[in-house]
Length: 214
Ligand code: ZN
Ligand code: ZN
Image 1 (cartoon, rainbow, N blue to C red):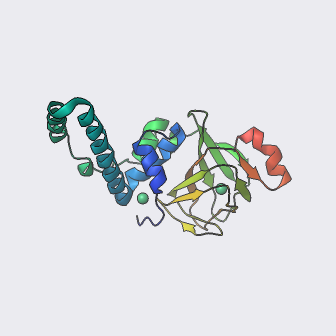
Image 2 (cartoon, rainbow, N blue to C red):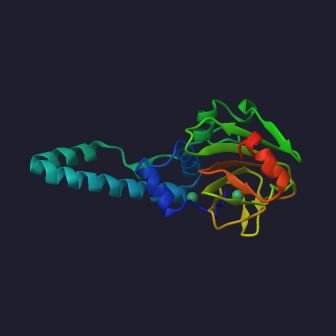
Image 3 (cartoon, rainbow, N blue to C red):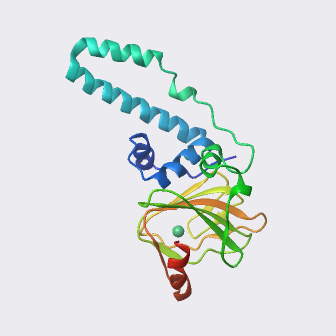
């Protein structure tokens, strides 16, 4: 798997600091489980974060506390040695754990044009859903009120900006409008996360929006 589109520094930092909504944690953990590069970046951020906390503790508690903290760090396994998580099916381990199984455990709902989606239960501050887009089919043209992250699990899609294959993550914000189209061939299965409802341009998708919560 050659991954060309990665997590932003902002997302990795937010994840390391435990400040992201649940749906965003899920997509970050899933990408990191597939991507050596982001796993290494995250480990570096966690090391910096840990060092900062120890520094604050040192100021607060003096030398003895620092030595105790350093002894504790020595005893910890190195974050960089964490092995990639492997799963047997299409879904990476963090996602399969979340769903409680592989694709067969997903309860799809049809949204028209052969497109199916399954909304995953997460905190209400952001929405996570799995999308199934048959080869050659487009997702309606839309803009974004907030941030939308799309992680490809199978197949590939392209939009006005670029092409995204397995493991790639697209980061779209309120300035972006796009029409993702699944490439011909194998259906494209993605995990998509949004922190605000999408603004659909066409009338019918806009009417359907409250029904499908997309
Ligand atoms: Zn990455
Ligand atoms: Zn979008």
